[in-house]
Length: 362
Ligand code: ADP
Ligand code: MG
Image (cartoon, rainbow, N blue to C red; front, top):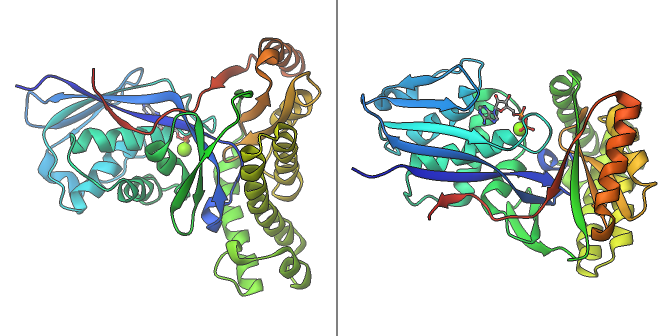
């Protein structure tokens, strides 16, 4: 009998390129050390069984019935959705017990959902060969089709392809990526605002629709093909125009950020962060008072090159570029300021770009 095996998949922070993924543009995430872990062992009763630390709800089913699983509107959908997609491709699933634990904070924009999907996928595969890009797409299908949240491919992609000490710039149209080595003399800090406004899920859908309206007005397949000149000359509702402007300028900012990173130009990298935040705040209208405050406050602090909200929006985390020597004072000042303004203790994470998902071998 084989012993237990453990499969790990990381959460992520997107450095820049927000709401560009479903518009087939560019994103620049890093995979994190914060990860989800799935321990697998043979099931005693021939059923597949999934459980997660700190959750009462579990799920079990006969492996041969995997393709007929239905969503239940609970956390298990992320895992069952992945199992179902694998089964639909004819991958045989073993009767396993999956025990899940995670240190990725949930619902804060660090993508605990993709970490859960990808770690589960590797757990179901048990080391079987599977193309990584296909696996990213499969996990994305589980989230869009089974869980029912429209989402781009970025989270699952970076969870599988992440690299130590580097960000990856994903072209969401070709689904190719390049590795972007980051300057050594900067610390990436995520600050969790601890709020997630309910508006989020519905606004996400509305933004997806607004982008489709803008693309149609300009006669392009996606906003990836739009330019600022086209936006200016095409008649469209004012709100829609602003959404399109965010996406087009954000794609340009990703490219500029990659160049600035290669040149080690931290001031420029920070400036692009702030421009990205203003674009999300004013044009895409997806920020919130709490994250706006965190950004406005951060950029007044010694050693902070720039700050922006990261993730889907309406709360969640900000990401900050900070000089290593200033990190301790920066964190303390941000804790104090946020506590004083909102009476909330933020969680703060020092982000170290880490490798993509894999089995943990001792
Ligand atoms: P994010 O991906 O930004 O963390 P989402 O709303 O996309 O936020 O995903 C969070 C959801 O994923 C949780 O509500 C839960 O259903 C599921 N989830 C994530 N991590 C775990 C876990 N360790 N155990 C059980 N469910 C989890
Ligand atoms: Mg998610």
